[in-house]
Length: 90
Image 1 (tube, rainbow, N blue to C red):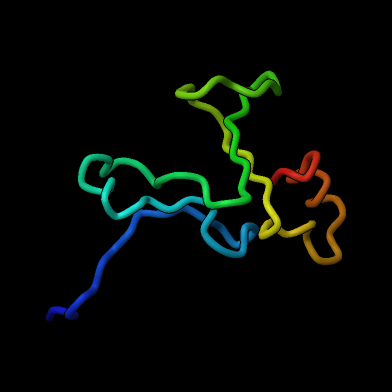
Image 2 (cartoon, one colour):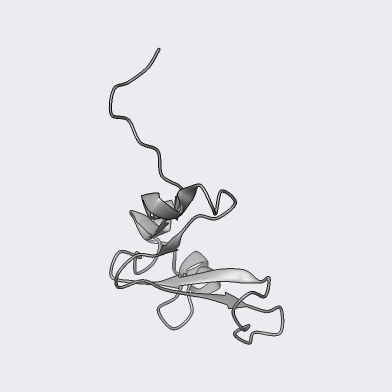
């Protein structure tokens, strides 16, 4: 089956971000099929190394996301909040 006018876009988000934090602009999708796109306006996304330092662009690490759409913490679970959030980043 086909859906007229349907366009798919790569993006990335999680329950904790409440919406996508990245989205791939349509004109870049074909040339970057292995990417989830660019940071959405207002989102700061960094890669952190195992030593707790921010990595330079292009390095592989754990993604940390901070934006107005990221939740403040887990409901009634301060331990999980403390383990998953640092300086406003999830």
